[in-house]
Image 1 (spheres, one colour):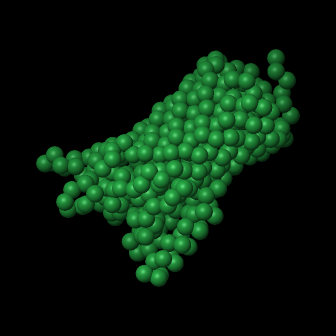
Image 2 (cartoon, rainbow, N blue to C red):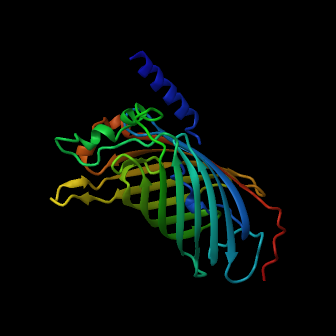
Image 3 (cartoon, rainbow, N blue to C red):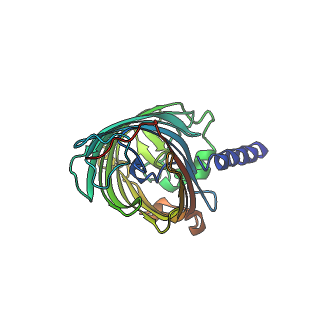
Length: 326
């Protein structure tokens, strides 16, 4: 008992230390990017007000984006609100539970505002002895999904012999509609479809730490997102974020569930401080609430559904002299 208590305290401290390191709010990754090469970093994370149900998220991400304009060639200039471009991206991401990379290609074909962007992203992650077997269908044999879909259950098993070093690769398709307004302001809607492929010994029953949801080894995730960034002064803005995650289902030959469809929604709202011209910075603090769509998948209290999210983003310039626009 004493060892378990010490392990939980140490585990909580490590998560709180990385809580300012999950990029559930990155404004589509285009904040203050320029035509041509771009390098930026994001340290972000969140923690519940009351521990027990929500699994803390914490990540550090380094991103490279090449923005290739489709009309003129204004390299070095910040993106126009109605910019048409191709986008090539590479991200390196690490958290206490996994690490890996993402490669993306896509673009905005039309010179207009609002903008439509389509992207394909390949993701590859390694679990740091953190993949744990989850209950994916509620029945007398397996018990309830709520028994394992919580932070207490996962933290008791991560980094132990009950966890595994596994590999995950995802194939994601992003479709976003975004309207730019004023000084860095925007409104956005998106639909993200991800095919999940995990190599695991756990009969396909795994946990996706990046999206905070149990998944099958061959699964899909539909992510519906809405966000807003509304400046009200030179340095301050209001940031809003709404996400809903939905996974697929699987049945055996007799019609019983091997995996039930799972989903949850999270909403966040808070102030954002921005500064810097050559190397823009943005610090965002948001509070919010999350909930699962089916009550039988949740066994916690209402107080455990409140969150705090902190994110710091900085862009680094390549010193390219802006090309005069025609």
